[in-house]
Length: 292
Ligand SMILES: NC(=O)c1ccc[n+]([C@@H]2O[C@H](COP(=O)([O-])OP(=O)(O)OC[C@H]3O[C@@H](n4cnc5c(N)ncnc54)[C@H](OP(=O)(O)O)[C@@H]3O)[C@@H](O)[C@H]2O)c1
Image (cartoon, rainbow, N blue to C red; front, top):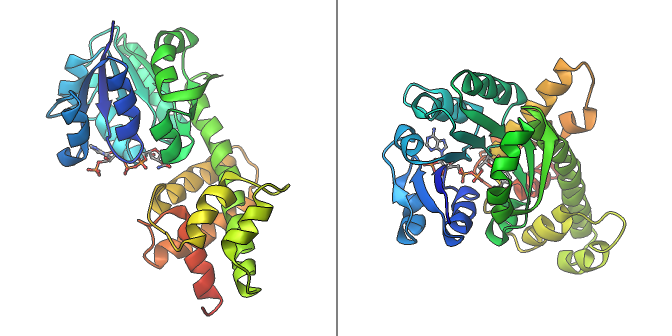
């Protein structure tokens, strides 16, 4: 028997994730800033809601996967938001890549109302969302996690409880620090290949199985080789993520110089107007830096 599930944020990630829940036989109540981005879900039977409040009124478990922390704050804690309109016993699961401190605040405010809340960011990109192979890292009360574990398993194949509220986001920051190093390495490697007059795909055919292999070289590297800089993971969101990780490191009093350098490259990408391109467009920054 399906559940009544709310879903707010039907973008690159949210739309395919939500589709899996629909196809698994759940009743879906959806809201997004741009309604047309929910049309494929509505065609499959999802019910459109006119506000986050309406989603909260209809659903037992409410998922959000929005852009950045201010969006999460507005949609969950805002005046017409989810929490203010959720009855005791309901569960809010925020899957946005967001700030640990905001997750702690949401969990505290929710608990005061008898509502349960989890932070559950994801990794695996749009392919993982489409194929339900996401890794999902969850912070909050273990009992709450146990209540929604089956739902999360519909969207991912590596669902892990990570600890108290905020622990999901801390784990996601570890992932983003890793991606930052990998993408700079992938871009520099392929730019070297280009300057040495080699075919980028042929180089990836070799090094993509080597000791430096990563999702960045094998996935995004192929797109660089094809000159495809369209977004699956926006530069603007990656800069948001690196900002969160750097702020957390500063708060905990340690340095992340590699991440800080990657962040500077991406700030340059933003300054060049690439914020709505995919993170592989860092390659274009290297081209420009080197007079191409
Ligand atoms: N793409 C990836 O590979 C990937 C992987 C892992 C994690 N993430 C993270 O997952 C989150 C979503 O990423 P995405 O790529 O799916 O981004 P996206 O395509 O921009 O999706 C975000 C969705 O949330 C909606 N939204 C944002 N703020 C809203 C608000 N205040 N009210 C109502 N709707 C709002 C947006 O509506 P509009 O379309 O109308 O603006 C959009 O449909 C981000 O935090 C990102 O860092 C992304």
